[in-house]
Image (cartoon, rainbow, N blue to C red; front, side, top):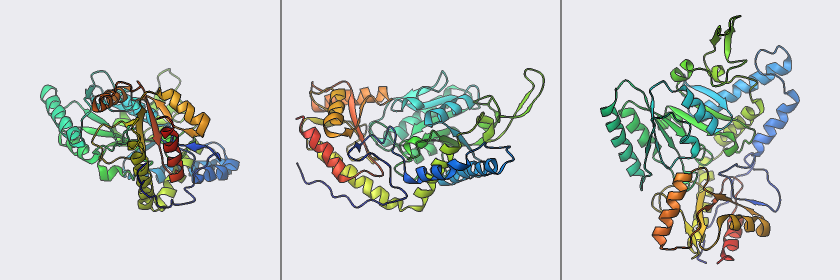
Length: 414
């Protein structure tokens, strides 16, 4: 085994994460553990838990204030513009489905085939799916070419929305979001960023990236209480039918069946009793991250990631999956296969024999994962690679000792 990169010490509370002693969680990309800041915020508010909006009692008034303050905190953390809506959803999938139902009629949505299913499946018929590029610069060129052709072949008045991830949930590779946004806007298109995997690892500023919409999941951002957000421009959202028709989404309901005036603003798409605790938990994590040394957090994660990838590369029976080159910027996610071993069997053995939790499968990104598995077989010339992969993902609370335990366990399979 080669000398592994050293890892600096990690920052501590309130960004400590909860866990079970003896269990090594390397599945952050699916659901990150709960940050102490989120747990403490929920525990403090629980005795006050009551209805949100329109309640006259002291408990309801406090809960309403906490809910709306959470909206402001989260919007500020992600750099929302003054006239953007911050809409609470269940998760990124929910947020993108909301936006898919809000796009104007005739909108063409342009995505890449490397997206998570949440950013592939909700879009209307007639959407354009571009091939997975081999390099970030290729993504920018391919989008420019596609939008040029699209504008040539359709009415320039019809809306176009580009939907792209910030970081792949399969490989962790970062996508050139700001450059893609510039291309989109140059062609009169809007852009939505799926930041589910990017936000837990790096600052995401909607204004700096110049994206029109942003979707995020709390359960990937150390706030596992069932809340996500869609942040973005108000006009499409204020003219679309409510995502959920019901109480809170209306400003007037008359006696006739369709005598309804829908609310404008976030309330229009937040029908029903809102997820107060999820909103407060997510806001608490955003506040804690905002106050933390994010440069130190990033340095710690990148050192862990380098240690993990160096160790995997030294195992002759392990092959890493990648879309771009080996040195492309990435967050703390690595997918790989163990030659001659079924991935589900490997994950099961890691859990049963070593108390290590990783992910196995195609990671809700089937087109991309299958393509990368085929690419790995072609790159290595091996015929014994399995049809599904393993994924190890790290973040707050991950340690060098945990990475080393995984590497040692995988070495035993050689």
